[in-house]
Structure formats: structure tokens, C-alpha cells
Image (cartoon, rainbow, N blue to C red; front, side, top):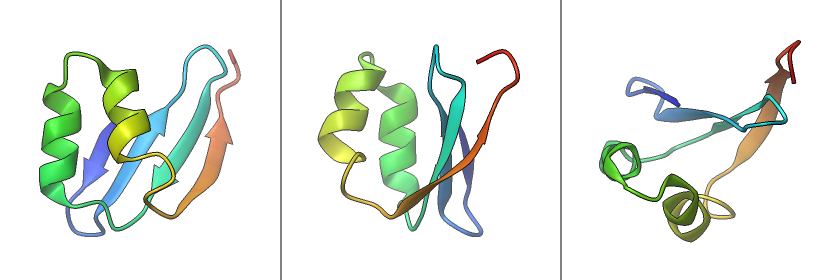
Length: 63
């Protein structure tokens, strides 16, 4: 995962598909909590998925 505070964009890569999605207007506090979460998938599903606009950016060649 990666976060750009200037644009409030959270980039998330999904394993094993290799898909990368950018989530827009994500508060920095949400990113920090996601980064520190022990259960990343559970946090993502509860607090990010379906709450922020997103789009598919790319799929890695190994995906």
C-alpha cells in the first residue's frame, strides 16, 4: 500500500491478482490506522471498501 497525502490517494495492491486500485479522498488518519492494523483485510473491508471512490490503475505482469 502507498499513500499520497497531497492528493489523499490510497493505492492498494491485491494479492494474488496483482490488481492495484487507487482510493480517493482517504483521510490520512484512515491510512495510518490501515497501515497499523493487524488484520489488514478486515480493516479494509470495514473502513475503506465501498466508502471511497476508487478505480483500477493496473495489473502487475506477475498477477
